[in-house]
Length: 334
Image 1 (cartoon, one colour):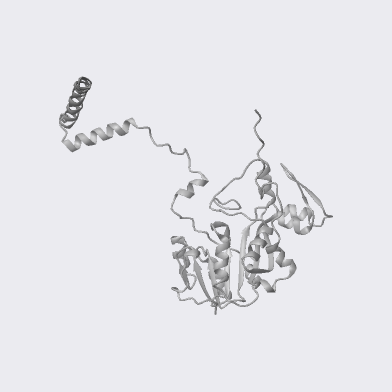
Image 2 (cartoon, rainbow, N blue to C red):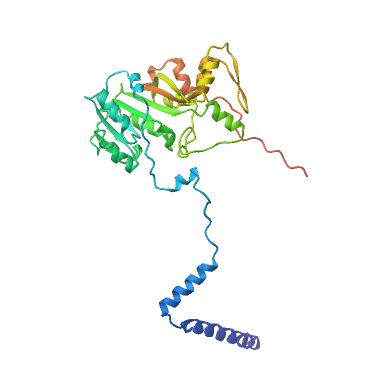
């Protein structure tokens, strides 16, 4: 037993001495001529870095590059002033969520000079521009606003604009609920949302593409996608009634609508990569729409008609893309 321990000790001593010698040599390594100790360290670090592989960087700036850059895009223009024709009464206190540079707010002030309008805009550059056009701008996402701190009491706001905003929000349902509990009981809300059922978006999908871009139906910053029916479902489930709706067209779908609008229905629409059947004029307009625009009003559940309640109570139709129950797994054969 003792002999074995002595034998192991003699084996370990040379290894230990070698280890200590290497440490000493490393600490006392001569500094290259003409370099101070810090300079030598920098030289060694540069040599080590030269041996590491270079970081990969894309060859070009792509549309998705926007996502890793500070927000700098300022949305200008906004909806046409004619959208205000949908309003059911003259506003007193309006809120423009995602007001951009305030260009729509400026047109609102021209039409309703006695009304007050606030903007909510998380883009600092856009908010600065908007502050010269509307009465007050809150520089933050709408979900981060403390309305009590801002001095806004529940029921004061009677008009809300949500133009191409909800598709950019992680939880648009909660945003609508928050607004439902902020505005007056007879408030009016104007909302527009891009239509993911657009004919030419479907054509791209059938062709195997889902092409994000810096703007448009597949704006790279969109994180939620809706059809007209699911827009209705979202509004009714969060406590609103759809008072009126309309839609906007893009130059590509306008000729399609003009060609098929008189029917007779059903009509078959031939696209490059797909054939689509529209069963009614409403179906056709939904397929041709670039975005849908809604006039909403808060509503109590007890005030809804049976048809309106269906948006809340009826389950979502079964689809091939979703199963409520997991598919059975076939047992592996021996």
